[in-house]
Structure formats: structure tokens, C-alpha cells
Image (cartoon, rainbow, N blue to C red; front, side):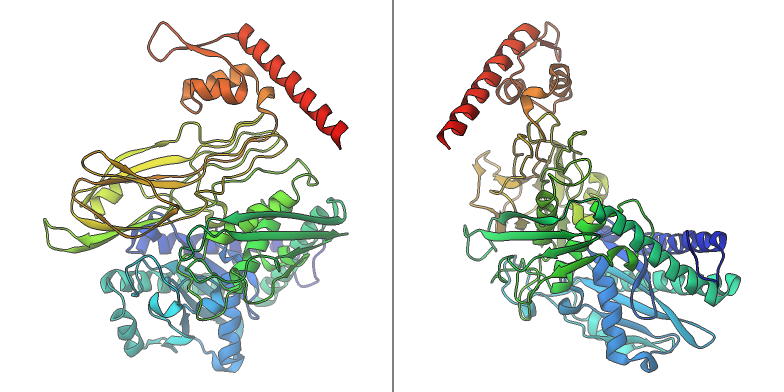
Length: 598
């Protein structure tokens, strides 16, 4: 490890660890002081430290998609005011979607860090406010209907809060007390970052800290380049599609990526992703670039912390404006996060055959969010409950089954809300069931992870919005593995009739007291031929409830019988071997026939 003359290796490593600790403390403080479940339970937020030019020093583990979003917001604020226009004690706020790439719910607070009158860094926090005004209905077609837009403003000037701007924001959201609680929590988090970073400089010296950061960037770059150099040179492509944009129902939205590797440099070309759409699934260009960076980080140095700008020097992203992941104003962006997840999956798919250790099959790639709102007839109070994020299945790899009930990749550390917390905060709902979804994982030598089923019964009349994608585009398998079950939603009326829908998107569907809805997340794709999965592993899956007896025989060729005792299952090894042999022979004959025809 090489270091600059200003700092020795041991000090550099101590400072690196301290930077991770600072962002961890910022994250903890925000989580423990926030008012909304989506922050302190679901952990839909991110914090970070950035250098004097806005480059990422350390991101607190949270939303991977904000590896680029926070940095771009800091750079935009710096460009707006100029280095001379930012003073100690200033706190700069925005939720501009064209800067950060996401929806208006993400409020980004940024505080400069000065040492001896020199601007050396920034502390920043992004958190999801549960409401920022806008229409309650699910379908929006422009940004103006989605809530309050806050341009780059100084919400604090030299340590003094701007009360007029604060009141303007509070008066444009439905739950001002909760919003202002989250406001204060975000401010506390970045003040923590500012004080800890200042203390670090006082202890080791500002030049030693800055030199350690430069060395950390260089080291991260070196490790990332080494990983890229192991991938064979070439251009690799993959594509998928989304169900629709919520406006033109049934019209798929194409996602196509191209990845070029040349030596230790990678280029991810997203120029063939669909143009921006009329509905609310657009995101800004920062989100598109961040999706590429998330994929790159996972492929090159997933365990290297802190996540910093150096890790991304070997990747270039080609993304022209006007795409669904580089949309321009006034595009609607309420559900900005959904399409980039499939972009990440497509990058993995493109490189699946050439990366070390093999690729990962597709995952459920959706947060499965619902929004139930209305007036509780028992109390007369208005409520608005967000369901999710809900875990689903991740794809299998050549040596491992996929993870089950895990939140999708771009949302990283976000968690589902515990049932007990949900029912306590929103007593007008009752969660009847939250369970793994049998047979949802794609079959394969390595089975895909399982999705989940959540059934919620409303105890008062209400309206339901749903924003679920990939209800018709199933997570794919690899190397002969099967596709997984897709995402979906159904409604069970109180007379027990069940309603299904053309896609996973509902806009203000009326529910009566006693009606229920079920959100089903998809599984992960399988990897390898299902006939090669050991029969005893299939038996274990059946006993665990992951795979049904019917699916064991249909998908895996494994015959399992119910035993004499309740819950007991027995393997018919002889019949399973016979059935698998016949299927393998049939596959071989088909392959030979296809080869001769070609």
C-alpha cells in the first residue's frame, strides 16, 4: 500500500475506519430521532460525507441508489452558490428531481464543514418524507402534481434557521408535525457528521485527513481496476422489459444495456433504454448513472468500505437525456426507483457468462409498495398508510440458492415494517398473513429465493393505490434454470370474491370495511438444470414449505409422497431416478435434433 508523504499507513487506516464510523453514527442518529416509520423502521434514507468538490468520501449503508444522488446534489449546491457563497453554519436544502434523479419525497440537507476557515468537506443526508403534498391518486403524469418542489435554498444561514421557508414547506405537506420531526432528525444527523469530521481533523491534522482520503480514493480505484481486468475484453448485451408506465396499460417498456470491457476500464451504455414515458416511472439522469454504479460496485468491490468516489473511476456511463432513466422536466417521477432495478439486473445478466464465479439470475426487482388512505370511521381521523417495502426472492448463483424475502437490490438496507408497528401506527388495518410464497422461486440446480405474501384487511372504508411492476415480466433463470413467479396483487372482497388485475397498478380502488388485499412478491430465477438438483435437497425444500409436492415432480422430476404422520414427506428415490433419466434423454434428443436442423 502506497501513501503520500503527509500520512503514514497506520494513520491512514485509522482515518479510513473513522470515516466509516462517522457515517454509521450519522445514520444511527437519524434513524433514532426520525418520526416516520419509513425512516426509522424501513430505513429509507442515506447519509454521507463528501470532499470539498462534492466527491463521495463515505456513504452510510442505506440506499445504494444514492451512491450518486447525494454526490450530485452536493455538487449542484456548490455550483449554485460557489465556494465563496457557502459559509459556516449554512444548511442547504433541495428535493429537485433533476438534480438527485428521484422523486420529491427525498429531502436532501447538506452542511459545509470548515476547519480554520477552509472548506474541507460536506455532510449530507437524504430521507424519504412520507408525504410532500401532491395528489393522493396513484397516476400522475407531470412533476407538478406530485408535491412541493424545493429548489436549492439555504434553510439555515450562518446557523440561523429560515423560519419563512420552513413554514412554507410545513404548510404544503399533509402531516406537518411528522415532516418537521424528520426535518430536525436530518439536521441533527449532518451536524453529527460536521462535528465528528472537525474532531478528526483536530486529532490527526487536516492535511493528514485529506491525504488519507486521497489515498483511499486511489486504493479503491486500483482494486476496482484489478477486478475489471479479470473480465475478458468484449461487448456484452442484455435486455428485459417492464409491464407498462401506468398510463398506456399493457404496453411494455424496453430496458436494454450494453457493457464494454477494455483492459481495466468498463463502459456501461444505457442509450437504448426506453425514452421517458407519460406515467410516473421516470427518473432523472443521476438515477440512471447510479444504477450503473450500483451494478459496477457489486461486480468489482462489493465488500470494500467506505463506498467512495475512487471505486467508480474505472467505469464510464453513456446515457443521453430523455430516457426513462434520464428524464427531463416535467416528467412524473413518483415511482422513480423501479426501472433502475431492472437496469442493474440487466448489467448482471449481460456479464453472467464471463465474470468470475458466474452470474446471478434475475430477482423480483420491485419494492411492492401500496398506499392505503381514507378516514377511519371509528375515530374520524384521516390516515395514509404505506405498505412495504416488501421482501422478495433474489436469483440463484452457480454455487448458492437465492435469498428469500429480501428487499430488492437498489434499496439495500431498507427493511420491511414489522407487523406489530404497522398495526399500532395504523389501527384501521389488520395484517392477516405475512409468509413465504411457496413455489415462487425459479427451479434450478440452485433454486431461486422465495417471494412473500402479505394479506391486509381494512377495518374501515378506504382507497388503495398500488405501484407494483414486473407482474408479467418474470425474473429470469440462467444456464437452464427456470424463471421465478412474478410480482402481483389481488383483492378479496368481504363476500370472498377475488379480483385480479391487468397489471400491478391500482389507482384509488375503493375498499369497503372487511375487504382485503394481498401483495405477492416474485421469487428469484433459478440457476442450472433443475434435474441436477440433488433429490434430498428437493425433499428438504418440500419439508420446509418452499416447494410443493406437485412442483417437485413437475419442475425437478422428484417424486415425493406424504408420509403416515402429519407433515411427513418421503422420497421415492427409484421412481425419481427413472423419471429424471427419461427427461434427460428427451432433452438430449431435442438438442441433437435442433443441432441437425441448424
